[in-house]
Amino acid sequence: MDPITLTTERLVLRPLAATDTDEVHAACQDPGIQRWIPVPVPYGRADAEAFVSRAPAGWQDGSEYNFAVRLGADGPLVACVGVVPSGAHAHEVGYWTVAGHRGRGYLTEALPAVVRWAFTEIGCVRMVWRAGIGNDASRAVAEKAGFTVEGVQRAAMEHRETLRDCWIGAVLPSDLGLPSRLPYLPSPSPSPSPVSGRV
Image 1 (cartoon, rainbow, N blue to C red):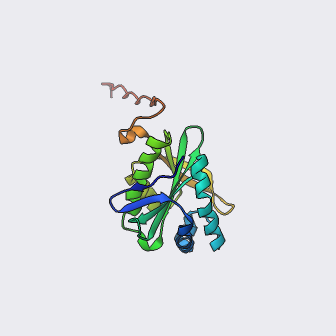
Image 2: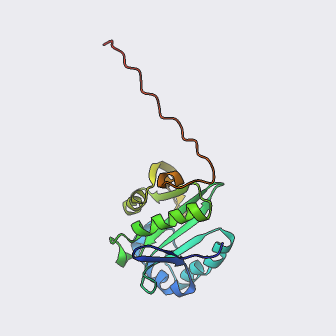
Image 3: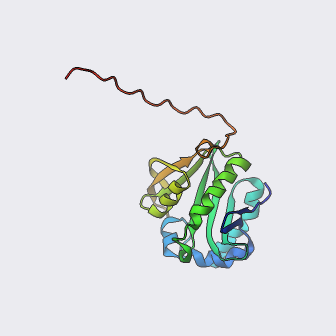
């Protein structure tokens, strides 16, 4: 699809571009990002160049949608959000925040905009979030954006050639009051157990 730009109250989310290279490179030096995100370590400028340079092709063929999240049109890079297909009917979202801009709610503001866009523009019917066990900041952002944590997947996330357990959660179009391109039949609620008068 053609690249698009999303806006929120404080933020502009646009496809990653070559002009983001320096800021991406600087951001990914952060040990916090390296701890949870499978970026190369050490993270060189060539890694940043490769990351941003694949963005146009990803948008065109639908294999990857990466957003640079900026504080206003001309403001600094504060975060990145990416969406990739995950199976036949789902997409998975991932994100990180630049160290100097954490704690200001930028991802909490950006993520719902990306999720709504995915549901309404690219046919997503289930948006999945995963994070390594212990990444409490990522989990808090996901839950504020409406994701339901569904459980733990064992050995489901590879990080530097080591398999790790991760949380998995999801949000559906119906959770946000949006239509879905496919009907959804949820499982019935369990019937309450009959109450006996005997002791």
